[in-house]
Length: 143
Image (tube, rainbow, N blue to C red):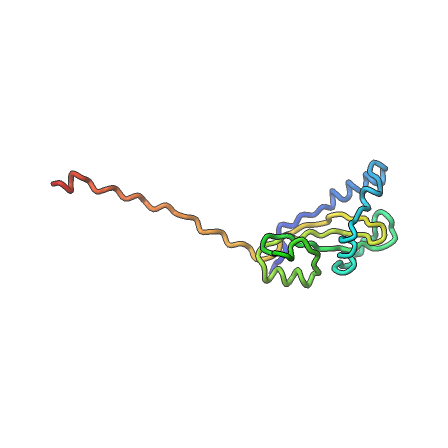
């Protein structure tokens, strides 16, 4: 069963931003600005990646998955582990997942990928028009 769909990869945007940082057009302080909430989410809900931080090169990045969706209620806008994502995908309607890479040392963070999970919404039935019935012919009724 395929759970992820409509996958968007932000690798080109990431490469472009890192090239601008390495060239000095963008300051390190502009890209290393992870919020304390994101850093805590990385600590408790993140999963380690094999990619070394492109800014400080001191530790491997942590991937954090955030969920968003109208049908999620209070769960929307929170970080979730892979196990929680699997459970949500089987029990909830369609929602989106945003994967952010975070360096817990220098606070580098970047959106890596987004995709959709959950039950595929059933299209609403189209209303069909019924053929208009001709009004009875008045002449025929009077004859």
